[in-house]
Image 1 (spheres, helix red, strand yellow):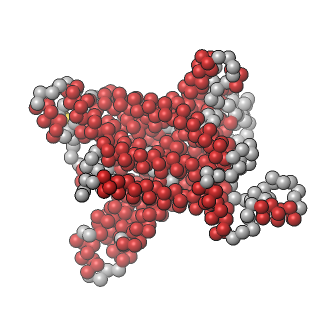
Image 2 (cartoon, rainbow over the protein chains, first blue to last red; image 1 turned 90 degrees about the horizontal axis):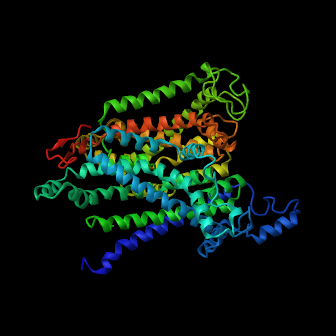
Image 3 (cartoon, rainbow over the protein chains, first blue to last red; image 1 turned 180 degrees about the horizontal axis):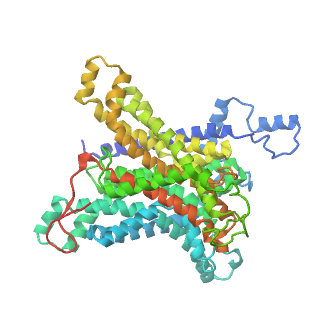
Length: 324
Length: 302
């Protein structure tokens, strides 16, 4: 009974339900939060010098003369249909804008995260291996410094260092369109270097510190001594016994810091005008484009909630002792 | 949640004990140093700090050791004045966050039951919501100002404190001396004040250093996104101004390196202090069984 597939699914459904509840809570909170915004769709200057009659008709059209409960209901129903409204700035549906932005963000975040993880693995393992040595202290000092540096500032420093050699912003050079696949690909990659590097470096610090600490603790476990007693080489022990177990806290850390990674996305994209979700938020703030801001915030929350869910599931998969 | 809190959580800092005195002292010295600069800023900077003293983005010279900014004002003076606002935002919002989080955590942990589950569900929601986007949304709706930045950072940074305090109070609640005090007829307020709070005070201090680091971070982020009034001079707005005037492309590193270095130094100092606290219940010094190719068991010298 305990191991039947149904009972195994139960915790997952509970987690899913919790994720849905949080998302709903945020959606409702979002609705009320944006009612604080000055003005509404009918008087925000979309129609300059509108007569009171036209205003009233617009308010009726947008349902603004209805009760709050009715408006909330309408908002949630539209949301369920994927309708996030229309951007004030470019008059396109918010959902379309956000979809393009999300894809661009992933194109920056995924390589950045991979680079950060690889760097953290190499330096973290080396520091734990040479624990207490000068290189261990130096590597940890570098990681702590990376962790302390604000992302927007690191972006500017790298921009300063690479000025004239790499493009300062954007995702591609609009003048290169139609010059052939290779030229366009090279251009894209050139635009990716600085944002990806900046992002990788700002998330690297926490990864490295946690990996090192975890590895140092794992190396003191009894099963490492047992493996040593079996005559296994250090390299095999490290790779097969120590590293696998030491990676668990890293999974936890990734889960705990997804919110911070989102902050990094906003700052790095704003510096490099990378047309992703972060830049969308930056632009929406500056243009007071409330539908875009509302939609971007909601999408980011959903992404974070889903990522947490995935991290929890990965964790219980990697460590069967942990039940959801 | 900030990475620092995450690191501290992963490393476990439930019951704080200073582990590394040198690092903690260095961190505290830096924090106190910045605090002193913030207090003394109006005395040591000339009143003409915002006035043009030379060419736009003038390079560092003997009279202006940190160069001039995009309006030709002296960067050294601006950084000193900025220290005042950044420390003000950091400390006041930290105070708000720690008081709020501490109160919620103590109430939830001490009373348990329905109070606990309501407060913790609320905490769970706020813990999951990406905090900087939420701050941006609220700041955009309220309008840019330093006061708003303080309130927003303070009111949205309490969740880690609440979680940590709750688990600690939960552990203290069932201790013999607390039950004894209750049996002797002590009221809830008396028990919390005299018996629970002294037990969790150290942790609260350790935690507030972490909150301070993230508050400094958020101040700079909000300023960068234009959500702190343009008339304000803080580390964050100095970086933002330099960025908006393309200081990087102009080669004027002095316009953004000093304020960013101050932020990094401040966050680093907070990290050093926070990481020096160690869970006393987890005080086992790890012994490595394999270590850089040598066979002998080596003690960690941390």
